[in-house]
Amino acid sequence: TDGAGLLISYNAGEGWFQPDQLRTGYIQSIAVDPNNKCVIYVTLGTQLFKSTDCNRSWKNVYEEARANTVLTSVAIDPDHSNIVWVGTSAGDLLKSADEAKSWVVKNRFKNGVSKILVSPSDGKHIFIATPEQGVYRSLDGGDFWGDDINEGLKQYGGAFAVHDIIFLDASKEWLLLSTQYGLIKSLNLGANWDALKLLTPPGGAQIQAVAVNPKNYLQIFYSTNSTLYRTDDGGEKWITKKLPTTRVPSALMVNPVNTNVMFMGVKFVEKQSGF
Image 1: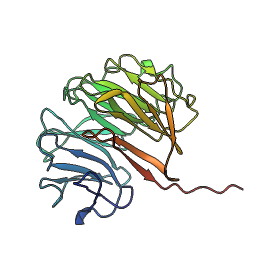
Image 2: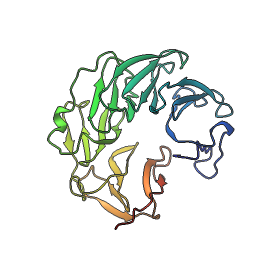
Image 3: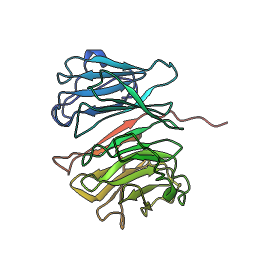
Image 4: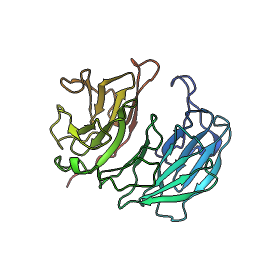
């Protein structure tokens, strides 16, 4: 959450509990070890916490020294889960190769790191989303970041303002960006980008959250402040549904086991009064 710490459910959202150490604060990113579900990392302000016993206890494994810089994203290499990645609001990309015991800086981007996406098909393929400078890519485990995959985004005004990056199809490493322009996909690791045809005009609506059915990449969901949009054919036709809340969506996820079930996280946004 953005103020009440971490909440955990072990029964698909029917019940929730909080660990004593993480009952307050903004948990901006969570990563679960794909090879050991009891190993979990979360970012909390300037700190990275780790649990090795399924949330029973937590240990601070990294702390950012700059008070005005927070940790924004954490990710785990699916091939070698001893490798952990952390991004910061200052644009630093940190890597640990020993389960968060020690750290090195792999790159310093010109914009803050909003999300780290590591391919489950190849852990050396890493994608970085930024709020103002588009996306970056490394195909060698973070050593080289020289590939400019933003070139294809220049044709879409507002595409450099990336809200989220997810896999359209993780097995094929197809990418989907949620941007100020709209939704943009790449089927070749970011070499080329194509915008989806949405019901909302380009730049005309704030896309708050996006999700893809992990068993069917043609089924895509996105939400604006008041409406949920769904396509079952990759974006040719869309279905709309009014949201069951007046709060603003902040996250969407399709249940990977029962894909008829969707989860939506919401946030409260205070309305500013006019003059």
